[in-house]
Every structure is written in C-alpha cells, then in structure tokens.
Image (cartoon, rainbow, N blue to C red; front, side):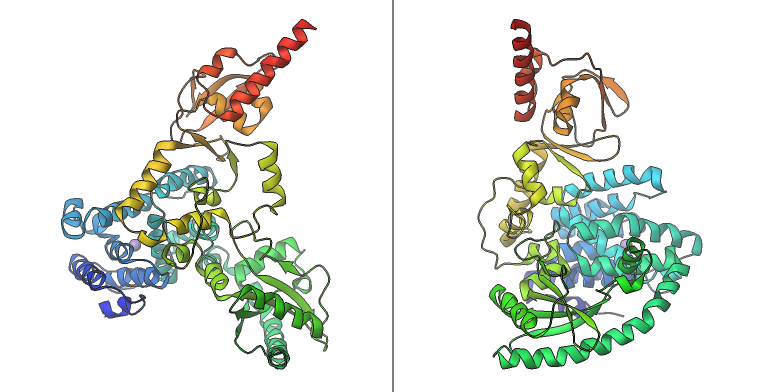
Length: 511
Ligand code: MN
C-alpha cells in the first residue's frame, strides 16, 4: 500500500507542521476506511491517497491535501464533523464538508444540468479549494471507472464531460481537463472514440516522425543563434478535443493542423519572440496561423506564441512557444497560482473576478458601452487576466484565516449571484432588486419591466435578491420607469438608465 511518503515527496519542501498534519490525516483515513473497498476490489483508502497525490502534484498546500485524504470520511464511514474538527481544525472540516456537499449533487441529464451547475457554483463559490479537491477526486474516479458497474458508468462519464471537465477548463487546468475528457468520452461514446483513434493512428505516426526531424533542425538553428537554454517536447491533440474540432471541420482530418505540436519552453518572454523570429527566418509560416497569445491572452488566461510552418519536405508543423511560467499556468491553471509565490502584483479594483471567469456567460452589473467594448476587443487587458492577479494577491497566506475572512467579506457580503431562467449568471451588489437585474441584462428590459418572478413566484419590484435566485423579468410595452425606483435600486447602471428615461419622458411632454 502507498505510504504517506508518496504524497509528501510530491510536495515542495513541506514544513514539519505540514508533514504532521498530513501524516495524521493519512493514518486517520486509513483506519476509518479499513473495511471499505472499491468496485475494483482495492481498499478504499487507495482512492484517498491517490486523490491526495493529485492535489500534491497540483501544488496544493497541506490543509487541502489533508482534506483530500479525509474527503469521504463524513459521507461514507460515519465519522462526525466534530471528530474532524477536533483532530484537524475547522478549516479542514470546512473543506471536507464542502466536498461532501458537492458530492450530493447528481447530474440527471439536460433538464437538471442547469440546476446542478447552479448548486455546484454556489457551493464552490465558498472556496475554490473545495472544487479543486472535487476535481482531484473525480480524476481518480475516472481513472478507475472501468471497475464501476456499467449502468452507473455512463452517468458518471457524462457528468464529467458536461460539468467537471468544463469547470476544470474554466479554471485553466488543461492537463486535468484533457485527462477527464478523454476518459469520459471513451465511456460516453466508445464507437466514436475507436473511430477517432483509428483515424489518427497513422497520422500521428507520420506527424511524430516529421516533428522529430523538424525538432532536430530547429535545435540546430537555435544553437547557431546562441540559444540553447530551452526545453522542448511535443504533444498530441487529445481525443476529445480532436472530436470537437472534427465536428467543426466537416470531419476532415486534413483540415486540422494541430494534431501534434512541438512545444518550446524558454526562460523569458523576450526569448519567446526571439525564437519565433528564428523559426520564421528559416521556415515559411502558414498565413493566418500565427497567434500571439502573449500580447492577447485567451479568455481563460492562456498565454503563448503559436505558429505553423512548412518544414520544407511537404509537412506542416505547429510550434508553441512559452515561458516556464506560462507553461505551468497552461497546464495547472488556477491551481498553480494559488501556490505560486513569485507573482508580484498590484491590487486590482475588484476582487473575485475569478468567479466570473468560471461562468459560462455572465452579465456584469456595470455593463456600460465602454466595458462591453473592452470585453469585445480584449486588447485592453493585454497582460495576465485580472483574476490571475487578484488570486495571486492572496497567494502568500492562501490557507490562513485572513484569506478566508477576506473571501467571505468581499464575496458573500458584497455580491449576490443570481440567474436568468436559462442559467446565465448575473452578478449584482447585495440588496439589488429585480430592476437592477433587468437593467444588467438589457436597458429595454429595465425600461419596460412590469413584474418579476423569483424562483417561480411573483414578487414586488423592490424585493432584495438572494444568492442563487432565478429571476424572470416580465415586460409590457406600455411600462415605464418610475421615479420611486431610484430609492431602492443599487446599481449605478440602473440609476443612470432610470434617470435618462425619466428625463426623456419629461422632455417629450414639455415639447
Ligand atoms: Mn471520493
């Protein structure tokens, strides 16, 4: 059986307190799950150690790892919350309870999808670590899914594909996303998986040969320029992302240029551009395939330079150039920032924009033409996305109480997250009304609001919205903003719109 060493060895120089906490959690879990086995016949404890190892690999701290070891104790073996708290403290308990709560969500197809996502979001919003533990738990469950009875397998795989993998992706945890997706996809759609595997088998072989050849001449070319301090390897496109791309490209594999890619990891941003220069100097790039995600990061924060070049012998090769830091970020996402210490960052104006990054489509309360413009041409925020910076602000003492307090104050006391009937999230200041909600979505919706339904019940327009409320706005053409609304609306946007509608009306009457 795995020893506690296996976990500790994956950590970056753990303190003696950390070792003590993890060892105690390890022993406690081993004892608690003694008579408990997995479908595979393995002791259940193996699952807990593997979950903890995934968390350690992600660079998580001792409290998160301890909670990972204990994450099934309350639900599965009747350990009480009190016992956990007495032995491991309230923060570990908080995380274990959070994971237990998330575990109670069950995905039952499209209709429940939104509901589950909503609950998932609310639960995880309390602490991002809960979600990371749940993702580690799910990853190990997926790795051992073949042992689970067939009837359950499909549901778990589908849930992984539709809920967990997209969340991991939103968190920028690409490595974990890829593994979750590929395993899940092979269970959800085994025929398609086999088909794609067959399709790429020959292609990948050719590609790897091409890449290796190209790699050699690239290293030579770089050495000639005095560039030797690089690390390079190649990656094959994951099955599931290939499946999605094939769907977009009329199933024509010849139209997909990034089946394989060479990755070049260099020390600095300047090196990235220098290497791109060397490559383009020696090989002709394919037009339209040069992507500067350093100057213009992807919405999920991904950074790097991509180019595709003709190798000269009929092949084309995609090259991705990044710094070590960008690479780590690209693979581990939010998890890497939570434990990364070398980010020196300024304070942003608004905290918890990382929450917004998680959401499929979000309507900002401060939606003005300028912010929309910004969101659209993304050039305004050329560096790392703000959420990364803000997370990193707290990096140093991620697991301390002050951080938790900050999180609670800032998040729970100042914001409410509400939903449209379609499941889109509308983020508002606390005590916002359905009128604020309506204006956050669209000015016309606010200007013609005639009523509101919250969680299926009609409510007054000055009702204070709560976290998780689903709000449906009723409109009438004849409805107009009322001066009285100004007394209770909370967002600047609503106030501004109401005033300008009232002014317009006054003007039209006097004219
Ligand atoms: Mn578990």
